[in-house]
Image 1 (cartoon, rainbow, N blue to C red):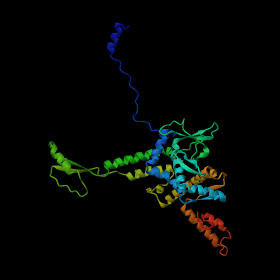
Image 2: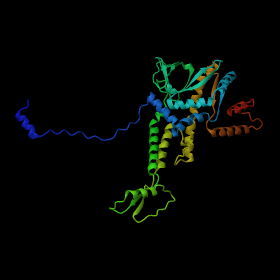
Image 3: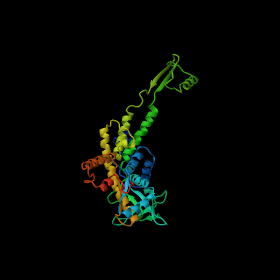
Image 4: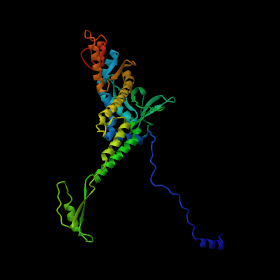
Length: 387
């Protein structure tokens, strides 16, 4: 119970003031080095980025096309080579290879299903990796690829494809996981920064890319009729570089935003160069003009690019040889694929080197280098055809 004296003291002291809160800064803390996860939203986002076109799509498509750029050949036992060649002749083989690489970069795994035909033989059909979950046993071995129902993330009733029914191209394996790393997910920060920069530059050019005019009517303190303002507004709507202004003394025309956007090309070049570096593609490979680049720096970038593609060729060749060709022949290692060197200058250098050795023994040009070996270096069929 509050006594009269206590109440009197409260009235004299006044209302208790709230304690001041600690100062806090405004804004949000940026999130760097975000963790990548494989869920429905992430897979949908990666697919949307790939399908939207532009720089990222071109960079993703470049490796798979360069793998095939100088051609390929089949090696191995003669009967097995003919068997494999007959099977892949019925496929759009080069599209299959390039799209497997694309999907591996977008989702982490490039998947295709090996489908037996009723009359014998088989065909291969690309599959959307976002629609499959890879199942493992207790020891980490892949036991199957579970199909996910459309527009859901529920795989409880989806059919299970066995490992021998699937080609699985994994270009960047993750330890203790059947899924590879998605290049899009790895580079998502740079991709988003580039997209935000391009959007900002587009809006800035739209708002400030062209000179604008401020037209003052009348003198200070004068009330100009709305009808007069509307008439002048109509007259100045369609301005062009051929316009001349003829006005009375009470109309003042001044230019604003005359400088446009400063350093826009430098800003765009910084972000696009960083994005190309993160995606591992030289800007010139996808049609960009790298500002400040010289022929020497471009050559260095292309040497690194061709080294990357050569390593990619070996991974793709191993995957196709083991997961497709061995299943066609039924004899592991009987036939394998060899992709030609992607470097255009290497073939010319090789030809020059071989020619010098052959010229050293003009009486017998093949005294040092056997004719069969020379033909093999250039994909020449000794029977008269060419691969």
